Amino acid sequence: MFEQTFKNIDDLLYKDAGADSELDYIGQTSWVMFLKYLDELEQDKADEAELKGQDYQYILGPEYRWPVWAMPKGPDNKLDHHTAMTGPDLIQFVDQKLFPYLAGFKVSADSPQTIEYKIGEIFSELKNKIQSGYILRDILEYADELPFRSSTDKHELSELYETKIKNMGNAGRNGGQYYTPRPLIRAMIKVVGPKIGEKVYDGAAGSCGFLCEAYEYMYNRMDKTTDNLQTLQEKTFYGKEKKNLAYVIGIMNMILHGIEAPNIIHTNTLGENIRDIQEKNRYHVILANPPFGGKERKEVQQNFDIKTGETAFLFLQHFIKSLKTGGRAAIVIKNTFLSNTDNASVSLRKHLLESCNLHTVLDMPAGTFLGAGVKTVVLFFQKGEPTKSIWFYQMDPGRNMGKTNPLNDKDLAEFVSLQKTIPETEQSWSLKVADVDEAMYDLSVKNPNTPEEAPLRSPEDILIEMETLDAETNSILKSIKELI
Image 1 (cartoon, one colour):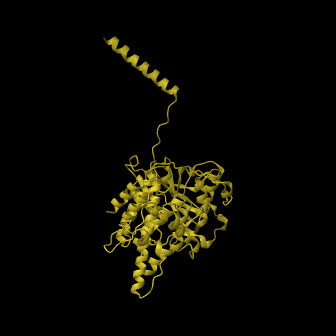
Image 2 (cartoon, helix red, strand yellow):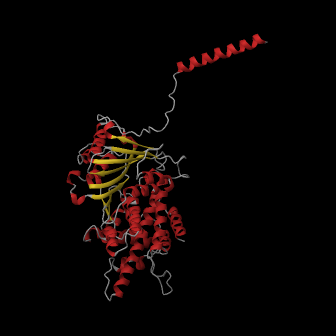
Image 3 (spheres, helix red, strand yellow):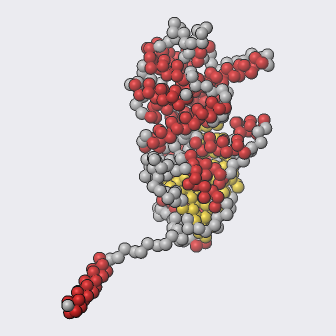
């Protein structure tokens, strides 16, 4: 049922002149879903207050509540067409009254850690792109069917939402930045093993895939006490995201996974001077796939000790600085980080090896990230002690990966299992840092257990062999003629 509802909404958005891509579809679906979710959350809280004999103070004023502007219903619990806005009236209300009203919460909220502030952030950043009030009316009716109250409903909705994020990533390069394959995220989390009471951080949060999967991992393994549940809800997951749409998608994704007021800040993480990061700003666990290939401006580079325009290298410095002593990290990065010869790359590898124990490097095959033709590695490290030995694992799924053959959990099962004992196999080996050239700190993935291919021969060698074979053939033919 839910899947068909999502499809129906997409079909309507396709017909509207204002939404032209998968990114628009998920952005517009998100704000509508958020307001429906908010209404059900308020209804739940009002019911709880009534049971206790208390009055509930609604977040939204009467005119802006879902049952008033979006879905006014008659005694038969069906849409009251006499009072419901539609056509131009509906668009005018949404654009000129509803969005400005909701955006105002960003100013009036007590703190960024409240749902009021999240409302203000979302509606400050998003715009309604739906141009037809008749199409919006139909979308609101479909959205009204989506239930958010039971955990089963939320779970199904979160899976559908994840699928939409994945499809957005597959649709083109604009969406790819928001989606890291979930099997890879789960493998990274299993190796790092976050525990209740630890703070988990992603400074390039995107659609919050790392934080949502970490929530599932920790929730399934902890004692379900009131204190633990509150800790998981309020004091465990933290993120930052620069881009408007990604921020909104991430907030919605976390809400659907069960986190009511996510600690996600809408900011440029790299705008923060890493010299200002204090112990109170540090985290036990960092999980991230920072964007790479960007060219950061000179003023942004001034926030870092190692100056470089490469976005991912600045993020890596931020993550190292943001880890508590003893903290663990798993970071996806381009494999060229291990071997680039420019000064910034060499300095950053040296800094990582000296300040952290880079204990594991997971080498991912081409095609891991759909639509992105880059090879990546995952760096697993712990802050506080220098690296002495690095265990490399070269993942080989035994097939070409792509849309029809994406990465799955089974592909990574061997890595997760072997990482506990770091043995030497055909696909894994260890490198002692003492054997690394200190001039370049080259950590290239070079599997010593793979038989080397025979080197290509020179043209001269090939010609000599051809002449030798011709001479042998002529000699054999001559012997045959003599026998005849």
